[in-house]
Length: 123
Image 1 (cartoon, rainbow, N blue to C red):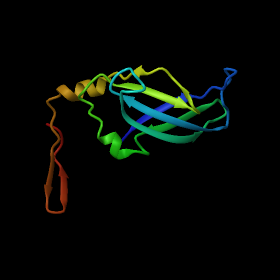
Image 2: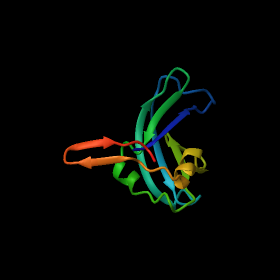
Image 3: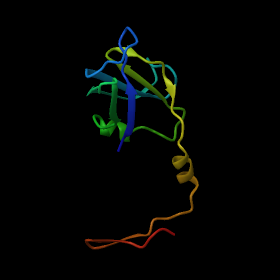
Image 4: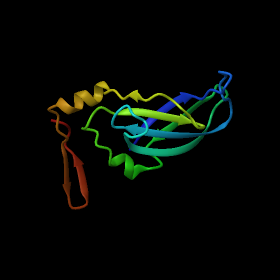
């Protein structure tokens, strides 16, 4: 479980940090204040490609903390710090799939009998 996150790391001269090892701290906030509203935090390292691009999975280092996030209590803000340089907190928005899943009437048709799991399809 986690969120994919992809960005370009920039240096002080506004050039991509190409082929560099970087440290990324990700905070998920329960409000816009990055100092007092931290609900989840983790730090990861990644290596950028030739364009400065990197990809991480938020929640892969601290899965218990990620699972403990109260997603029903909104708003949530994403605050990213790359090599000690913080970004401004950014509101996290719902994606169409998440909004649809909340209101769908589809039910999974999974049955468990002993050690056998069968899929009866969605209803």
